[in-house]
Amino acid sequence: MSTKSNIIIVYGGTGYYGRKVVQRLTQKGEAVRVVSRNRENAVEILGENVDIFQGDVTNHQTIVKSLQNVSTVIICLSAMSNKLIRKMEQIEHDAVITIMAEAKRLNISRLIYMSGYEMREQLLNDLKIPEFGEIKIKIEKQISESDFNWTILGDAPAFEIFFAFIRNGKMAVPGGGLNAIPCISADDVGEITAQAALRDDLNGQRLKLTGPEAFTFPKAAERIASISGKTINHMAIPLLVINIVSFCLLPFAPFVRFLYKSLKMLNNFPSDLADNVPNDHKILRDLFIYKPVTLEMETTKRVNNGLL
Ligand SMILES: NC(=O)c1ccc[n+]([C@@H]2O[C@H](COP(=O)([O-])OP(=O)(O)OC[C@H]3O[C@@H](n4cnc5c(N)ncnc54)[C@H](OP(=O)(O)O)[C@@H]3O)[C@@H](O)[C@H]2O)c1
Image (cartoon, rainbow, N blue to C red; front, side, top):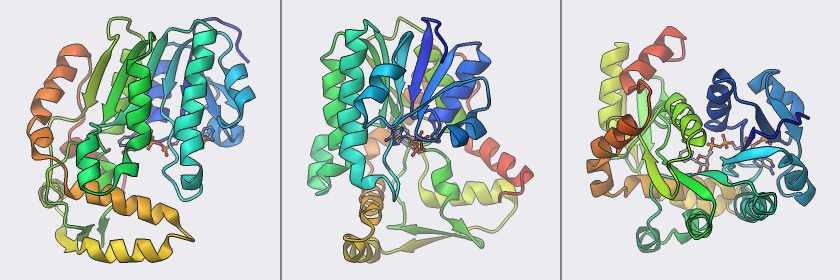
């Protein structure tokens, strides 16, 4: 383990967004430590230049030991998978509270927390899916009331969300996805988060991380088709079908129920938030030095890599 005292620790550093953060930090020459349950897998994802601390954040000692010689904490943990969903409270809530307590004890001041784009309690209650956001809302409250030098990053979904629904020339979307949503490339999340972690002047700020444009699923299908030259027909699958299936699967596969809730959220995404995407994006452009990736660029990359 590295003994320098300026280490940036990334909890969730092997994840979809976390690995991009780690990549950008190491490119900038920073000493980075990542906590992962599987060292071999972490090395495969991140390479040899990262200090991998093998451990599970639900274990108190993992947190205590991993925080030694750390100056900055970045939290991008997620339990959004079939295997982890039953431990969501322990991973996304209890472990984060422990990380904060131990970081405080060690006088670590800088804290970056990845959250959802904007967590609206009232909307989640109205949609009858309060549990979809309640952990993040609780953690954000704890952080904003703390005396850390903190920055909360409200991440939009990755562009991946559009490509994930495309199969054989069809984009089949539960609920249709007719509300525009913000979206961003994982590379931009990595770059912005890395720059934010290295700055001291973003204390007490909550930033929304989005690309330049909000898209409905039909509009994304149209744009991806026109860039790739492939036929992509948008289709709506009734959300009720997913509701029923996810309910039946609840005892065996609770993750499907969580997916249903996220789809419900996407299909009811507030229009005022989508309308404000260009402004939120401009705030990022003014604050950070980077060249944003657009849906066009992401599509071209996928075509060139044979992924579309
Ligand atoms: N992906 C998106 O489109 C998106 C959209 C909006 C917001 N976000 C937010 O961004 C953050 C990161 O999400 P993500 O999609 O990048 O996550 P992800 O790909 O699912 O990765 C989850 C990470 O959490 C780590 N982890 C889970 N349980 C752990 C445990 N018990 N001990 C140690 N590490 C553990 C995993 O590490 P190991 O497997 O190596 O142990 C992995 O690095 C979350 O706050 C999420 O809500 C993501």
